[in-house]
Image (cartoon, rainbow, N blue to C red; front, side, top):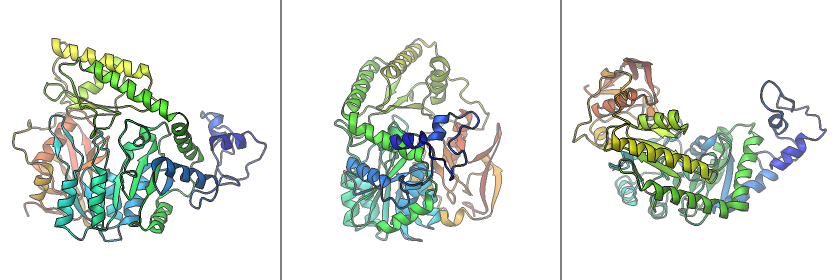
Amino acid sequence: MFAMLETYGESDIYPYHMPGHKRHPWGELPQDMYLRDITEIDGFDNLHQPEGILRSLQEKAAVLYGSEECYYLVNGSTGGILSAVSGAVPFGGHILMARNCHRSAYHAAYLGKLRISYLYPSELTSYGILDAITPGQVQAALDQEPGIQAVLLVSPTYEGRIADIRQIAGIVHRKGIPLIVDEAHGAHLGLAEGFAQNSCQAGADLVVHSVHKTLPALTQTALLHVNGPLVDRERVRRFLDIYQSSSPSYLLMASIDNALSGVVQQGEKSFADFLGRWKEMGENLKQCRHLKFLPAGISQDVGKLLVCGKDIRISGRQFYETLLARYHLQMEMATETSVLAMFTVNDTQEGYRRLTKALLEIDRELESGDLGPDAGSLKEGMPVRQPEAGNLPWEQAQSLSPGLPLAEAWDMEKCLVPLEESVGRYAAGFVNLYPPGIPVLVPGETMTHMLYEKIARWIGMGLTVQGVKGSGTGRYLEVIRTGSLQE
C-alpha cells in the first residue's frame, strides 16, 4: 500500500480534496509525510466499506493470523476493545472479565451499561506481578453465574503472562457464549516457530492485536479478528463504524500493511534472530546474583524482560532512573520493585548488548553496595506505612467492601477529599499506574486501607499515578459525594 501512496504523492494530480495540507509541506514536518497522507479518493478504497485494496489487505491479515475476518484499526486496540465488547454483549448485558483489563474494557462496559463480574488473577509474589487467568477460574465463575453473555481476558498480560486460551475457549464455548481476548501485547504470537500460538489459532471468537506494540508499525495501529458463529458480525461492524474515525489515516494503514508484509517476506529469519539474541541475553544474565528475571517459557512471552529487585532495598523507580540517566536506556515501565523492557523483531544486537552490560554492572554494584539503598525513593512525603504481612488479596478486600455498579457510579455526584481521607469511600473515577493503564480502583469501588497504602507508595516513589489530583503532600481523590463503606 505504501508504494501506491508514494506513486500518488509524486504524481501531477492536484488535490482538490482533504487533507488541508494539499500534499505541500507546512512548518517543520517533512514533505514526504505530507505527500503520502491522503483521504478516501479513487483507487484507495474506504475502511468503512472496503471493496478494493483495503479489503484485500484485511483478508491477507486474517490468513496470516488464522482468523476468519480481520479489520484494520487506526485508533489502537482501544477501538477494537470497545467494538468487541459492544458487539458481543447486548446493552444492559452481563460480562465476565479479568480485573486486570485495560481501561478501554471498563469504558465499553460503562457505555453499554453492562453488569460486570470479575476474574481476579493470582499474584506471582516472587515478582510482584499478576499472573494470567486460569481455565479453572473461568469454569468456576461460569458455573456460579449462568447469566454471563461473554468472557473477556487479557493474554499476554502487560508483563507477558500467557493464558491457556485453547482450554478456556472450550470452557466458554460449552456455555454457548463468545470469548474475547485482549491480545494487544501479542501481535507477534503465532507468526513463527518458537513463539506461543495466538488466540485466533487457539479458538477465541474476538481477538484484538496492537500491531504497534510488538511489531514494527506506527503508533495507533491495531487489528480486530472475528471467528466462529457466536458473534453477531454485523453488530461488530456497526460498532467499528461508531468507534473508528470516518477519516482513517492512510499512513497508519500503510504501516500495518508494511509490518505484516515484512513478517511474510522476512519473518522466518527475523524471528529466528529475535529468539537467538533473546536466548544469548538470558544466558549472559545468569551471572546476576541480586537481580532476577522472569524466565521465558510456555506461560511467559519472549520479548518481555521483567527485571526485579524484590528481595533487596532498591525500587523499580531507581532501576528505571539509573538505566536512563547513566546508560541512556529507556524502559517501558517502572513499578515498586521492577522495571519492564520490551523486545521485538526490530531490536538490534547492539540494543541487547547495551542492556545486558548495564544490568550486569548494576548487579555488581549491588554486590559491593556501591549503588546504595534507594534513599530517595519516597520523594513526595505522602503518609505511608510499610506493607504488612497478611494483607488481604485484591479480590477479597473488595468483596468485603461491596461497591456500586460502574454504569451508575461514574455519573453520580462527586467531590474531592484528601487522599488519606478517602479510605472507606466509593471512588468516583479510575485510579491506575501508567503505564499500563490497568485500574486499581474503578468508579463505585471502595478505597481500602491496602489500596490507599499501595497508591501512596507509588506516589512517594515518583511513579505516574493517574486519577489522583494535586501534588506533593496535597493529594486528592474524587469520591462519590454520598455513600461510604461506613454508611
